[in-house]
Image 1: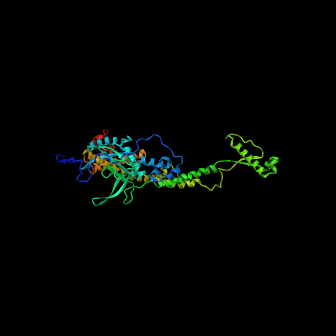
Image 2: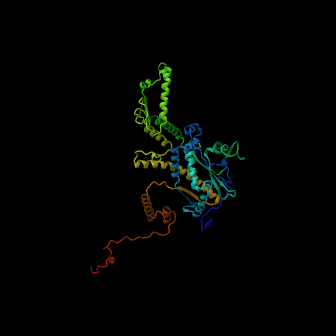
Image 3: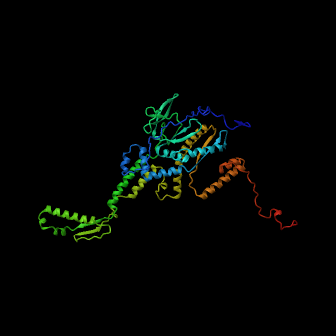
Length: 473
């Protein structure tokens, strides 16, 4: 459509056909992937009594990672840090095809309504969906989801995150090219009439897949937390060993000695000439003493005969234990922090690092998060392009994650002030228009023209402002 010779919207392409200019696949209604087979979810959660044994008996790496996230503090903290920092808000903008500076505010308003209702299972909207996608990328090695389109092809019903471990890939021939085709293995999901050899093809689905650091010629992603399995295994074993050492050497214990010479004088006459009866009598007496001490309460006093001596052993101060717990735990901590890709300042490992070095560590950590954010940015923009097609709009979606901010309020104000000075200079020099500067600073067009300000007079330079001086002077 053209108004005064200017084209605002191109003719709408039939939804059942692919546009000729970008070779996009045709829209298809419905959902092809299968929902989980679990029909009921209990609110009760069980806990592991023998974590190390369960971990070593878990064959699948992803199941082991999920187990440790639920049961160990280190992996739980690492996931918490990643999920919270990776999604600190976002902004979705739509620009016209023929003018990448012109925002489509009406389309953005409709998108906000759509974003508030997607991911209906958690009622968290698009923000909750992004958290789930980041979780899949960090824990399960890829972001995967499918969009269900209405039967009339004019809207998206919902967006369903998919478990990447339910997706298998087959290298097949398509028009003379070898292409990896995704299939959803029915072993994870309900049987469906559309399944073929136990798998449901997602080739024709509105399916989106973004792997995490994939290998060459391998569409599957990489498990970022897999190295933590051996580190946590070793940590749990070390903690169990340290527990035994603490019980054996770390606590003060009583040293009870019985005077054998005095005890021999107390042996009954019938047992003095029989060695077997002597041993039985001595053993019986020692067991009697042990029983008496075991029956004492913590605040009871020691009352005993002179043949028994009681004193405290130097268990806690035993210098010959041959074990430096601190050095061992520092070694384990380094292995865990490297495995979960998180610096010590984020894992509650307090050390002697300076504030500058801690800031450098945090910036490196944030760079890793931004890499995952770029993947979710592309995925959400792909969903947005599909949403535009269902509504018949022509536009360019631009999804932007908010910057992970670790500056103070004063620093933020100073940065905003410097940006305002920069864009003001750019406008005064004629490099940009006022609307562009206003969009960058405030997110909307300018509401007026710049006000020309006059410099203040310092006195003595303008005779009109010096009323106490005569014209003769």
